[in-house]
Image (cartoon, rainbow, N blue to C red; front, side, top):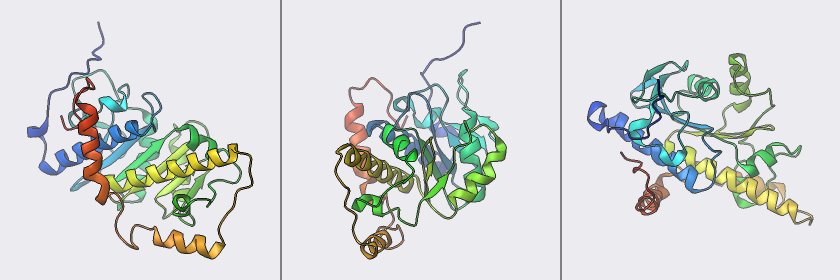
Amino acid sequence: MTANYSTQFRSIKDEVSPGEWEARVNLAACYRLTDSFGMTDLIYNHITARIPGDDEHLLINLYGLLYKEISASNLVKIDLEGNILWQPDTDYGINKSGYVIHGAIHRARPELKCVIHTHTRAGMAVCSMKCGLLPMTQTSMRFVGHLGYHDYEGPALDLAERERLVRDLGPHDAMLLRNHGLLTCGATIQQAFNTMYQLEMSCRSQVDAMAGGQEIVLPPQEVIDHTANLYQPGTRRPYGVLEWHAMLRLLDAEGKNSGYPPYWH
């Protein structure tokens, strides 16, 4: 029999609640933005979001689609243990690592609505540096005192690793997975994306500066600590809200001649 790997999916807008549909649209947009800003790894990695009013169920991508192919109607509904509750008519499934990592965090931190994991070149580079992320830019100072570190244990397939992942993330919304990649989470999809974008830019800046071969200048510790406090989501305003509509306009403009279905399909 021929496997069904078609990427033509029917809209399910009228088959889910308005809250679930909104979450699907925003999560699909988050996948597209992650692609647009160069933070993808072929078909790998995951972004998950809780379904509003249903904290035991998550949305995740089909394992086999590019991020630029993700749309609201082809996201898969799973429970916290990775059991598929609904998926489109396709032979694509989900990646087990998606719920080993994400399911653990969603279960332990119910206030978090979205978790993002990436394998970017700069992210993997900084995750492999003994020094970790340096507070060398205004962007990276945001993470001082607010960043977890998790030592590498191999591909994330062992359910026993869940407890250690949660322990190492602690109360933070960002973590470096040593020798692996980046992870961020947030109270909203928008906030989690903003945090990932800023963490990625911090890593890129650090790699670029180190490649220059010059001594890196760090501000005084009191300035670093003051800046870190000012850039926390609760200090001034939640992250992700102000720029989200602009990001959606960016996707609309990029998608007009892309040949891919719109994220909101």
